[in-house]
Structure formats: structure tokens, C-alpha cells
Image (tube, rainbow, N blue to C red):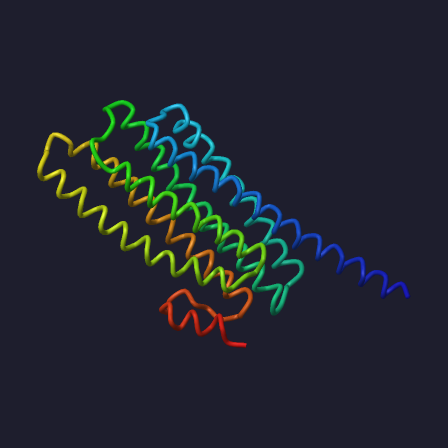
Length: 238
């Protein structure tokens, strides 16, 4: 009887540890989402004060990544999880890394907003920032949602949306390059827009990564380096 109680107690503590790291991850995700939205707003409104807050708050995201990694490392060492639990811990570690890198990209955008506040608003590119920014912010929100719900269909949609963002990014960069050739005086300010668009495109890539991690968690198949057709097949296989 004592052995059963002890085993049950250990199992409950283990479940609590897994729940705690998941909770930390979702908290980190919410903070990163806000960072991205604030960085986009700072760019569109050329708001240097908001941009400064994004830059400063990036340290909080870095600290959360370290804390979650440490907790996951302890779980791996103490509990030696197997099968689905092992995939969960690995997925949390990988997702945390992607969230930290999204925070880095938001910080880059905020720095460009500060530069534009100092040099003057760019003559072009804000429509593209708004449009691609909305799409990427939505991708990130859905990527986090599909993790919470372990929804592989939504994860597949995020991956598909990333392809659209890549095409929109390429088109926007071509347009910005053409404009700079027509008006060389605008090069410095338009480059800030281009670097910001690049950051948004990278955020989309990381959102896709998170979605792929979810598919790995649920299905047990690594889909990081497969095409969308193969990914869809993995998602729909029973």
C-alpha cells in the first residue's frame, strides 16, 4: 500500500512539473506575441518610446528561455520521460528557442523604428509592413493556439500560410529595391523598412517551426524538412 501511495505521489509531482513548464511556455508565448504587435505598431506609428520598451523587454524573454530550458533539463535528468512525454519536453525546448528568436526579430524591428524616428519616416513600405505584419502576427497566434489545443490541422494551416508570406515578402522587397533606384536619397530610410520586412518574414518562419513541432508532438513524425504535400499527408494519416 505504501509503495502504491509513493508511486502515485511521484506520478502526481511529475505531472505537475510537466504542467508547470507548459504554463511557462504559454506565458512566454503571450509576451512574445505582445512584443511582435508592439514592434509593428512602433514601426507604423514611428513611436520611439514604444520601440524602446520592446528593446528593453527582450531581456525578459531571454530570461524565460533560460528558465524553461533549465526546468526541462531537470525533468529529462530526473524523470527520464519516454514516448509522448519525451516528445512533449523536446517540443517545449524547441518551441522556447523559436519564441526567443521571434523576440530577437521583434527587437530588430523596434530598433529600425527608433532609427526612423531619428531620420524621418520612410517614403514607402508602410502598407507592406501593415499587411505582412498582420499575417505574421496571426500566424504566431495560431501557432501558439495549435500547441495549446494540439491541433495538427491548424498547424498545417500555419505552415501553408508561411508560403504566402514568403511570396509577399519577395514581392515587397522587389518593390522597395525599385523605389530606391528611382530615388537614391531614400535609401537609408527604405533600408530600415526592408530590414523590418525581413524580420517579419523570419517571424513567419519561426511560427511555422512551432507548428511543425506540434505535428511532431501529436503524430511522432518530424516534418521539419518535408514539403507541404508530405506534411499534409502526415497530418491526415490515422
